[in-house]
Length: 392
Image (tube, rainbow, N blue to C red; front, side, top):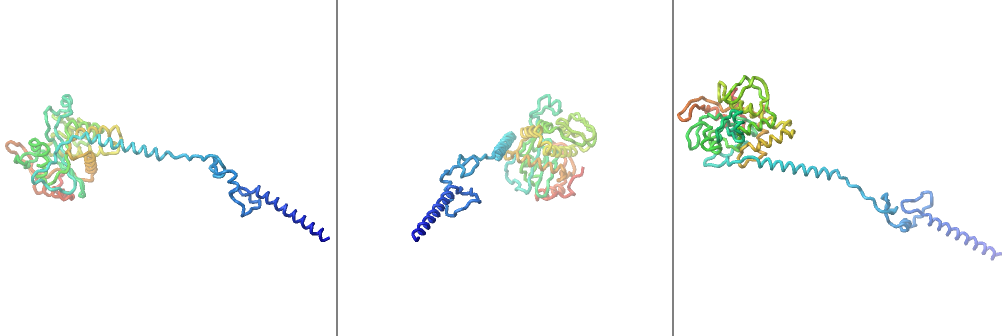
């Protein structure tokens, strides 16, 4: 009886152990890999979570699952930033190349040279802008058409002092018949300084007569002037009265109109006025400011059919000091645009009277007190007093 119970308990214990082992084997066989548990099945925290990984290996599938096997998929890199960067570099190289090309076309001459007792540097920036009667670049037929004559060489036809700084911008005409002391030559007309010693002596004469140091120099002849005006499609001017001057090849009716290069040249050269040279310098100043305003306008700068011909004509026809560059001319043009837009002052040196002298002919003289007041304001980079601004 005792032996029978003992044998029965042994069989039951054996069946229980067998069932337990069978259950464990099934659980191990169906245990999912790490990350793919089926939450409805029993979970043993002591099982190896990477058992399935060891059976499959550590490959990558096409979907990027590090446990699914297969080769990795390559990421596509964005090409947009690279393309944009390449285009930007090319544009910068083109702009830089164009700048140096145009800068190299400027005609240069050693104009602003030192001399004993030269005027000390003054605040602000001062340009001496000269229009010469050089016929260089014009054919004989063009000289006949434009009524320029056939004289060789070059002489000053107009002179203007451009100043800009903290005191504002101003454009002052220096009449060519102004009677001033010329270093080493005595007193004579201002344009005689150019005839005696070229732009160097002219600059020295202006500096000593005004007390203002010239920082930049720009000169343009007849041919260059015509080319620049035509390059931008002409310049609109409002003519007060009819002007007919056969000597300048000019025949204009009163009113606002666009002047082409030939008409513009006649307009700034004619002296067919009651006040002769004094009214002529007013027209020169007015026209030059309008020319620079149009040249610096978006309609010109953003139009390659105007901006490129303008740049080529201007750089090949301007004569500058050997220390001047293209960016100086651009800054000058921008200052002129401000003057013509009403943000500055345009005037003529105050005139005191006139006279004549042997070997000189008729001349005009400056009003010493008012002229000194005007130039003192520029020397100190201050606004020009209203009482010395010449009324038209």
